[in-house]
Image (cartoon, rainbow, N blue to C red; front, side, top):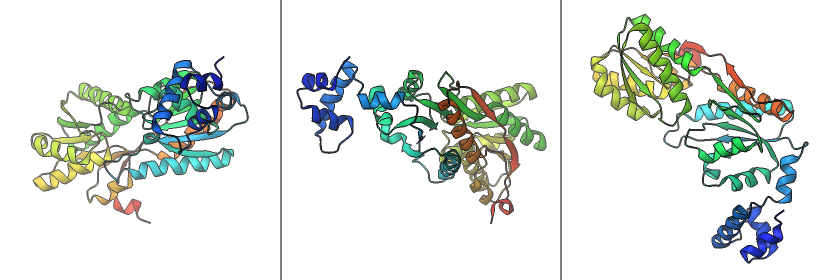
Length: 329
């Protein structure tokens, strides 16, 4: 078994320096830090403290791993609902929770990420906003070192559960409702980001609806951006009967564009964020109870930490028409 002495000798530094690097002390030069981490990774060293934390049956600390949207402040509502729901449920279950942001770990290797969470006595991780491109996180999930619950990503194994609504069905339902209400045939569908799990699921729902109803479907990528959805709408909506958006934020961009163009086209969104009620136009959307989703994720973490196997948890969704009167206090 590789020891801390082996790492120190191989890196040409003192044992205390290796300890400081492993515990993320700030007063270590970047050159030394890189040298030690390279040796640790090459030798496959796992500190005793880290190993003890990973095998501990008493540690009950849970990390909430969030990916903040830095392109807009409007989406903060979702993250705040996630956090509030998780904290509320964790208090009920007497679990200690901390918040970690993707930006803090995105450049770490699997070994570094494992040490980072283990050094803080983390046994469970709830992951919000994971994409298909988060390679190291995928490795962490496969490693089985932590109990993990992913939100809106279809990943399940012995130590991992996923919690979400049925995004394909929800997209099908809200688009169908809007199309039937307005007798539409020519559809402009604005999708989310190409690396998002929910993007593919919602797109599949829209394609299935187009086939079932024999619709003329144009698909354009809006990257969950209000600005991009506005630009796409201004370019293509004049020759379409309806604009279906894979998020409320894009639906707001589409509606604003139609207002500027001085034409009417029905628009529907997805998520049910409060901001939709302030747009001035009623739009169909899928309301997700993000706080409840987060509560269920923490419940699932507790189940996994009790020794149960991972599973897929599907929660209900609701179709609503957001109105200002429904959101004011």
